[in-house]
Length: 462
Image (cartoon, rainbow, N blue to C red; front, side, top):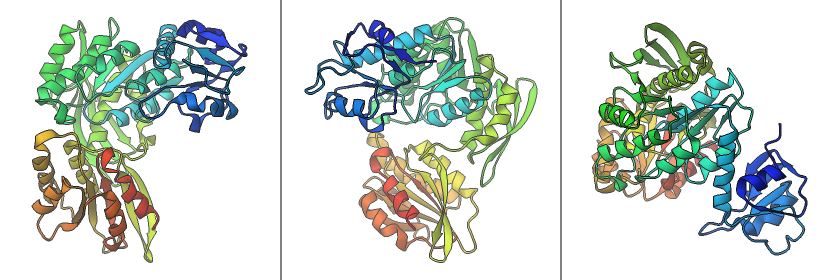
């Protein structure tokens, strides 16, 4: 089945067809560098780059047409859809995709764990019907409409991730997606530079309820201290189907036991009155806990929750969120755990806890290599320093750090656990090889802006 025919695109975007008008698009892209044959290229204009400069290159690379709000030089005669504004055109295309869809749709938000939960949902649901889901972390003002515009009309299920760092951002996204099920993974002090309290963060996350379809379901973290606030917000939004997950005795999906092994996570849980034992193919207590939200969501979408639980053994971590690499190293080998995509206080502690379950080689150590956590406001120095407690609790052998905020952690560590500190990730990438020895297990983590992927790259080069 084709994704978008020329006439459908014209009708959805209220545009004008120029050039050839008999094309059919099999995909939608906003990046001319990754065009696949058969894509519709949407020329978004941003503050630093204008997609209109790359329309000709996109079509030469295989795009069947381009959505534009001006005809670029040298593009006369090319297949174009001319609209008033391409960002609005993308949103219109997304709205048309949602309007024609018969899929059961779930949207995921939360302070941490959004992408992993979205990926677990995609894995579990894809075993039960044709499933569309957003790639990577396409969870913002352009990622969500792009993901919707890519949704085939005949899919059975669809999974979307919705993100925000300011109040009000989720409202247009959730009203665009109109999910049948909304999941909130947790509420924590993330993006706290933009919020006075975690209550404010909870209220902003609760905006997802405003787009839930009539008769829909919300799934909430029962152990979180803001659970009652979230439940009240869902009720105020007119949502009567409210479910929860956690260790709390009243949770609909209740964690009874969870064992983190070096390669996966074993979970024993009650799904209401039904006992389930299953494995998630990624190590980490947070993976096991979020898997419970996944099972509730699958059930609320009309799927088979028990079948979904057995699917999760095949889960693998998304890029930069726990990927594991064995690297030849000075006559032996090391294991690198790549958590470089992003970081917050709660996810840092989770990564340190997961490192504790790793098994170093003979003579090896458990080493945390950490970069700055950003958008934490005035509490940032203290939040960084407090990570020393997690390193002690989980017996981390050595902690190496990068960035001005991580300097506070470096100073808070005892001398026996204090590794090297560098001004930034680039400098640390040049020094880290002097520290690592064969047999070591190394976790690398930091906010995206701290660019700790450079350290991962240095380690993978061996």
